[in-house]
Amino acid sequence: MSHLLPHFEPHEAAKAALQKLYLPYKWLIFLPFLVVSTNLAALSIIIYGLLGGQRLMRIIPIIWARANAKVTPASVEVVGREHIDPNQSYVVVANHQSHFDIFAIYGWLGIDIRWVMKKELRHIPVFGYACEVMGHVIIDRSNHRAAMASIETAKSRISNGTSIIFFPEGTRSLDGQLLPFKAGAFKFAKDLSLPILPVTITGSHDILPSKTIRLQPGQMQMIVHPPIEVTEKSSIKALARKASEVIDSAL
Image (cartoon, rainbow, N blue to C red):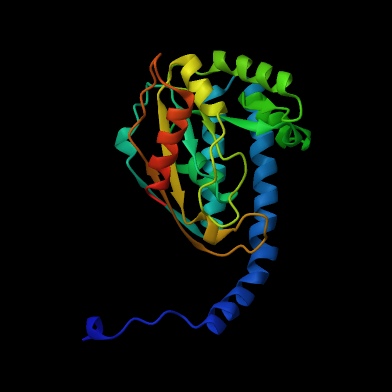
């Protein structure tokens, strides 16, 4: 008879009470674990990178992402993994709702990726140098010429199944709704004639809303869409519009 009973959403007061109960865990368990695990992962990447352990260097971020998601706790469901060819390089484009998008992509996407990162992250001790060792693309958004030079350098690293990922919105969405896409990712894809792999992430905004510390347990889903082919005739604006429509269709 239980299936005949009406379903009730938890009362707002109950939700607030659960948030209060989670607060000590967030500050005493999760955040210390995040800081320690991030520094250990970064240090390990630097060591393995300098010693030539490229395979181990790529595995460490996966372990780091999954461990932090588990400690949150946050689960990730992946839909559409069959659309990924492991031998193909892609320009991956994803919506950006939360810092937890990074855990989802690193931990569960399952491809070798390079990130496009703002230069301020390079100044973080240990972590910044680890990103450089990993070959991530560090750009100076305040200097267009330097940013373009960084992107040009990155092109030589994107081959043989290694992909590059962009958050084409350029920032995290405050309300979870998709923001307009910037052109950089799509120009990169056209310059290298690489297919675009659209990815939609849902649920991360509820776990950690943008520009807040209101962390709570939750569930994420990552939908990998069929690649968008890029040809000489492809328009950058048309590619951006198509990717935006595809990603938004799953939000």
